[in-house]
Image: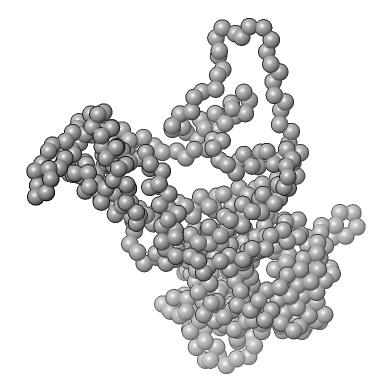
Length: 219
Length: 249
């Protein structure tokens, strides 16, 4: 989670001091655990350095405290963050994809068993999530409930993927990955035209993500 | 106590050139009060299994015990009587009579079994009330939403107090919201009435409501998993979702 943007979003409401920020994060996100004060302090220091926030010393009953506020730059940063769409990462970070791809080459356990383990765990999780959903039925709408719905939808999608794997298993087993390209001899070309692009934090469209996946497979 | 015991069940459709072996030796036991989902890719034999257990079709070999009756030995008349008295069916397309009201549709199995009309209608009212349909008693199916029609279907299945309720893709025609609602109702009502339920579904979300998921592939059981409900607490899921706080930024 982006603590930095959470802080910007809170400071947009009103100036706050560090301890206050920490206390406000958990209830907004409906989690029962606070972000560590140290992490907040570190982030605040870095944000101040970057000019995203400013601070004013305020004398109170106890020791003086630093009250932080949003700068114009911080406001712009927050706006940019809100308006940047979030697309889930479809790339190779998916650990199950690795297991599937390699186990099809042959491994110490049959693919079927890997699928079975995965399926059993996903069903347990989905069962649990369904149960919580039922228990929270009478709660009024909240972002947290939508996060739960999102988790359910993803578990469901993962289970459907396993179904597809099962259905296509014979073909998958027959799939032969292409041989790696032979090493080029001689001097490398002057313009390294097709290098693997460095990982970017956001992939803008699904089509682009899939394209990237393909390119990686080919290079 | 086991309600259903299936031993070495096979079913082959067609013969000669290219027979289709829908089930290739399935054995399983289902305990009273269980809520079981049968899953699997299409063509895995899940509907065939359900039809055989419900006596809608006959196995090629193997035996099916419902309670202490081996239904593979029953004659057609005995079998249909057993179906009518002991098994409640819920269908994907609801299979309600379009000219009858909700109340009459639910009462139908009792009327066919020559229960007095007033008593049958009264019992139908009670069954529909359990499913939150008291204000729809006199509506015809066409005036009801899909979710409501399926609730009528469930009430009709339950009215005979069956030893076993079988559902063939009961949420297949419903959107996500209605299908959640229908499965949750089915589970609540069946838990209250201590009914045993077997659902065939291709929808993982629906299957995950069950206490047990049986996974079929190519006519064989490849997985049989009991889903544990006891350890679940709201805080646990909270912890799951709390992962978002753990990954600092």
